Length: 386
Image 1: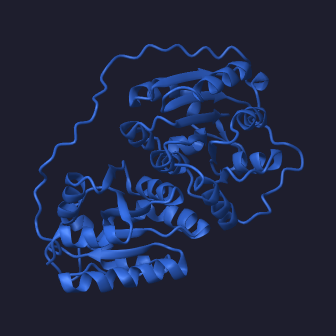
Image 2: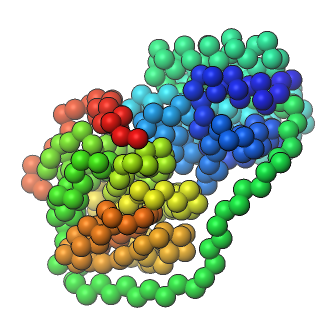
């Protein structure tokens, strides 16, 4: 058994200062110590997949990051771990608890299967792992091993934590967060017929016309990134591939660690509906420099035009409820441009919802630059800002 202090300060010496994830009783000493001590920053994510994406954003902004969760949540994290971290080669340090350990302490029945397959699952998705160090004299060697893997493979490494690995640590501080409870009155007046709304391409042209130097743009997976690349390929643009629904968490991770940079997230209705809970995490952190744009054409266009459920959703009311500082919902391109221009000068997080119509430019191809190259030049751009 080791102390949370010994492990975490050894991590701090290696640059790991940002922590996120979801709680587990095994992790309580680690989480409590991070919350109590100002050398660390800690954000409680709404789910494990969002935590991985949030940490990826922090890594791209120059912060070494640790993601912590119970092994039952490993399934939730599989999508970004395999299609975000693997694709873009983003290393993270994971702490995954081993609930339901075979031949281990008796546990609840829902942990039985995952307990049996946790380490095999990590290996199958090419994540290096070892058991969490169980004595203080093993901490440095364990971290050196993890660091060597992350440096060589540019992939996450996981410490698999057994029950009782860390001495108890009682939380001494109380996280005083703002409380939002009010009624919302917002009328969405979409006056244009569906086929008269602006296209996604028109909206992206507006975004590029406004997002110059001092701005980072994260485009959700699908046609948004491909069209943005076709319009004007820039080193301040990150084109998502896979990890659907994770764009907002990535943008939040960047915005929190690059306060001198304006961060624009270009989201899609299908993607946002997939991980709506990320809006809660974003607004609890309240990055003042974040603009969240939702381009909503009510379909999964890149997979054949199947309907999403967005026609039944009032995104503006939801955004207000989550706590965005400014909210607009429109189907008018001129109003969208005006609001985005204002948002560049406002304190966020800002939410802008634009109803669009389907349509893909003729001859639309895919970026010729590889995802890893996109990430690396994007990180170089981020490095120019505080």
